[in-house]
Length: 224
Image (cartoon, rainbow, N blue to C red; front, side):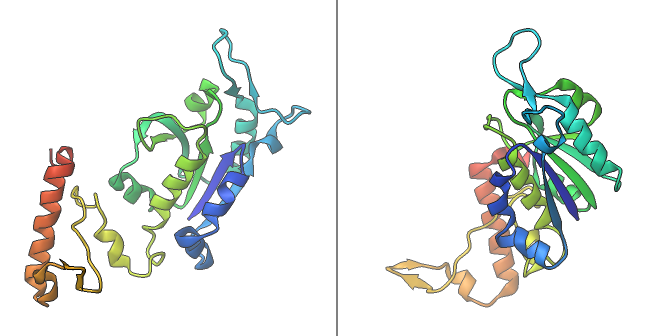
């Protein structure tokens, strides 16, 4: 999978793309990330990519030209399955959506910034808008990393144990059950006996019951 990220703050993406699972995916040749500074695609001599909005509203708006020039340059080299815009009013990112996105080959992610982007970008260049929550951030760089991580970790071979992703929260519309590790007794805080029994069927039944109980208590909306 190839992910091209368009941003005005490329330095904000360097650290998260260079460590942990995302770094492992690149080292294994299973994913590649390319960060593009939108200031390299503006014709403004001061490298500006924003301007005041028509109508006098407060804030600055990302201009259509540098975004269009960057996307056009990328599309001239290869086909892209999706051009994603990180937006607080986009479709909420979910695990099923991440599952679908993980099957794609080439993806562009545009990081919003300032007051927003010229609406023509959303009308003519974007194929999918994604939100990571009902709140506003300074820019779309953090959501872009969240989206990329959610996608890439599902690619076969990225995680050390591929079954691990299948048991994550939300994969079956349930929260994950509690997990424990050694020691079995710490300061009197004990691991449930069932997990020490070695009885795989009963352990699986316990995990399902705990997942359902936690979901009913914490996120009943997932069961509707």
